[in-house]
Image 1 (cartoon, rainbow, N blue to C red):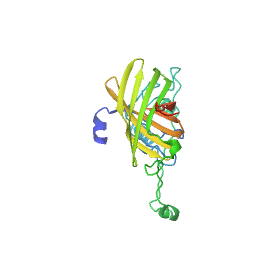
Image 2: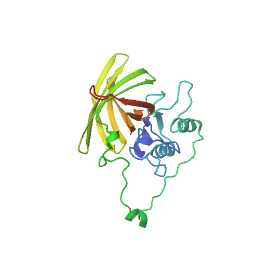
Image 3: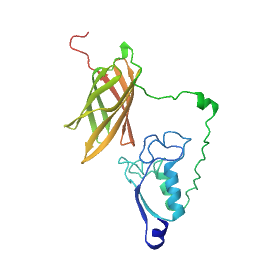
Length: 237
């Protein structure tokens, strides 16, 4: 690359991600590396490399909802985990980033402690928090009101189901993926097709009797709070 850049113009197109103290897990760029505030910052490493090599670049995306988002809204406020750094880079004021040097030898406590998984399918919910069945939700979004029906089925330690959406009369039906259930915690991903693109929509929720309170994350950038209510069987009282 260095030899090529010495003779030819080099431009790094459409990079983006989530960085700095406000970075969010599972954002675009550096999968898994944004999950911990103490881990190396993939986005800022990329931006520092661009600066060090004096390469031209295009940051993506100048839109409040098509991530990775550079702006929080159409008032052009920079996002705190991406836009602010691009604005500094354009102004020549971006602080230099120095990657952390991790220790290769784990501490005794870390070596002896078993790994911890945030969500596991090994724990079943109590009878009062049974997720099996049909749930309904209505919520407002940037593209209008959405109506959803969620159908869940638990067999042993496996969670399966469907997400059936209705957006202004346009209906969709998707088998949920990456589904996990741990006690009262539930997680799954719905893949939505929009303008010939597949957009991941992640749901992370807590089962509270006949309600599930979800945080719904669209394309790793837009979050929405959703409350789904369980549909009672016709024969139940």
